[in-house]
Image (cartoon, rainbow, N blue to C red; front, side, top):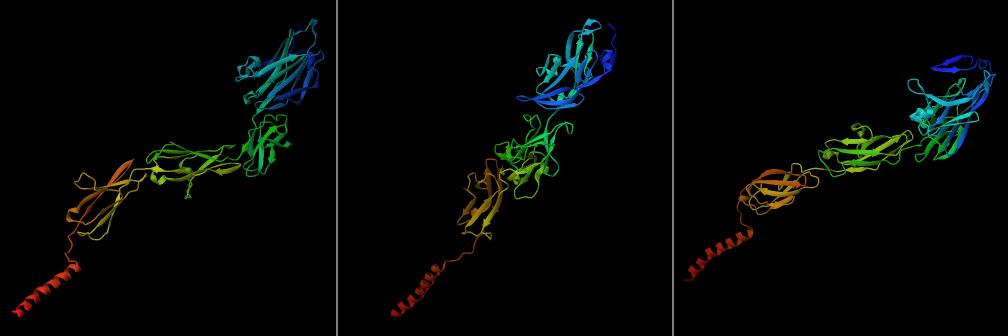
Length: 438
């Protein structure tokens, strides 16, 4: 057999009979995307046809398919039945792709394509079918066949696998369908609330969108593989961790979550205050470290994305704490005299509310319980140091004060004085009368 010339492309050898280098003609190649059925895309392609019957179709354009769909790349080929006065028979067909490092591998043996690739050949037509496309499948694919006398390579087909996304264009009402497809390569379908509303359009669509609506797009022919829907945030929910009773000094985390696409940004607020609390912690969590009683109050979050905003219902944060140092008030506040009454009132900031107990110095038993302690008919022995104890389940606090009872001036009531005066008069007058009677 006469030696065939070799054309080098990269690291591969194209062994082609000389007669094949003299003539080129046009043909066709098809790309098919599948969901439940197959939708056919026709691409302009070329075929090399030799005088001796050698030929193969190939694509010089990029093929754009959607992630998750199925693509079919079809290649037809011809070769002479006799070459150099010998029978020329087909021995092998292969679909190859390039891996990292430049090495080309047979798709049927590549683990990345396991279970997803079929090589369907018959009647001089070979079809490469790749299911469940991944973005990593974006690559060049080559078909080759080998006879007992020559090896023939097709030029590469470039496949781009795109993952569709919808984005808002600036501050306008325009939505854009983002893909890796070349401009003008395909047209777009738009959906509102999963219903088709625009078709055969550019990647842009103008909507007057409402917060309850959702929007998505698809490539024409890939309607069963639309982009994820985009929509404004739904009503946010707020969770508190830990969910048990919140004690002063502990750490509490508030988490805001909202179903939204694109994902929402979150801001925290405390009611009755204009301060923006987002600086406490960026993102959906608000962390209150070493929480204080002053942190008690109503909190809410706001979720916002490019399509709208929504605020949550308010959630109450009730910080529990032990009684603070009690204060004692005395009524009346003037000098306390013997025989009078005095009312002592004890107050302490506590949550839950404190219980109160009264003690006198050097006495083991409490004098009284309750917030108010009243002493009537004061005597000198009531003087001394008293303490008020405020207590709840989280702790106790005491406050001590000194009570001084002073002696008062002695006075008879008017009702007692009058009889005494009358009696004195009687005693003075009676002897005179008796004397005069003798």
